[in-house]
Image 1: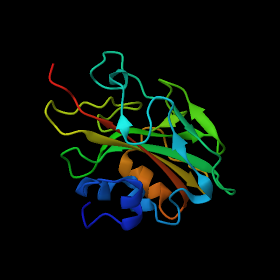
Image 2: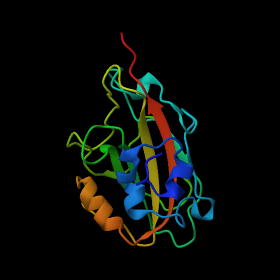
Image 3: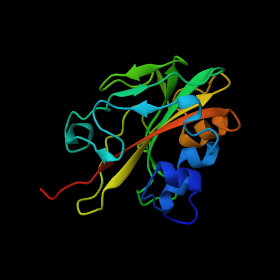
Image 4: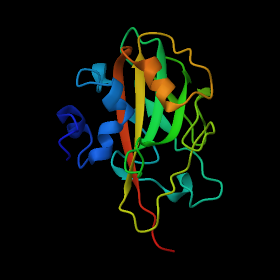
Length: 188
């Protein structure tokens, strides 16, 4: 684990690399907000730290987002924001696979292939799921699903970018749930 990663994040993301220190959870989350009130994020398609099925990646022509489920956020939650990032991409910031909000501030689900009601632009400049597409031969990349519970309504315009989403969440995160999938492209 790199020294720049806070200890609280290192416990949640074992084997984290230097890129993990740039995740949205590092910018607006904290030891106090991680899993606050038992807030948790899961998927029926993969367990934490387990591989994504290729059907959710660029290896499939009709790839779609994996299903997600979350527990009730803490009392006082007014909005939920989902950020999915690849901290292992070779870029200044993590590669954004999904920015979404508009989910009701209670326990809920996103079904397989379902995007949040409102969304920002992923790293390809479009709304919706950006299917993981690591280079052949790369070690497995982490895809970190981060669900933030905010104490204010989230009123950012659809199509906003990662920077705007993080700025809007600043000082308003009361809980965050993190779930990590991995993916490594095998030689064909």
